[in-house]
Length: 231
Image (cartoon, rainbow, N blue to C red; front, side, top):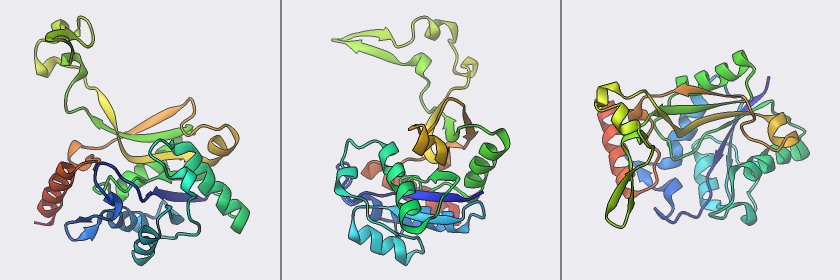
């Protein structure tokens, strides 16, 4: 079974300019994902999909493949993931005759994932025969205690739940997608036009490694965690 990682890294970023190659603890952000992917024995190839020549150059310097450039029409703010990965898989098949069985989406904004996280995702998909596997972590702020605000009036987001669970310790565990590892089947992407299908399973990661970098504050937090890991 051929398993490839595709790291999507477009050049544009509104929240943090040039986010994917901004330095994090001395290395470009994308380097953390590339290095972890290359260490993984679960992956046969590590490919970066980008529209940006500078990102492509840095990706190659850290050992990733950039066998094609992503077209500009697939690099806008509103472009969903599916056409980006269809482009990557189709390009490999047409230009190289290389047909992957599984594709692992490794977003460069999740620098703290580990080799084990990648292994766990790929292994679960193979062992369960599911359509997809996605990484999750426990929510930081429980939705049962969240509020809707209209004017200056507050209303429960989920009616009745805040009364059912008056103590934090009583709240049932709820998880969120953390964007670190998504494993999908090639046939679902290309033939069924879906990334995740009907049978989606999860692997659970801890919150400390689940940071998804989108703001300058996220960079600061991630850098503190990385420097802490080194001690």
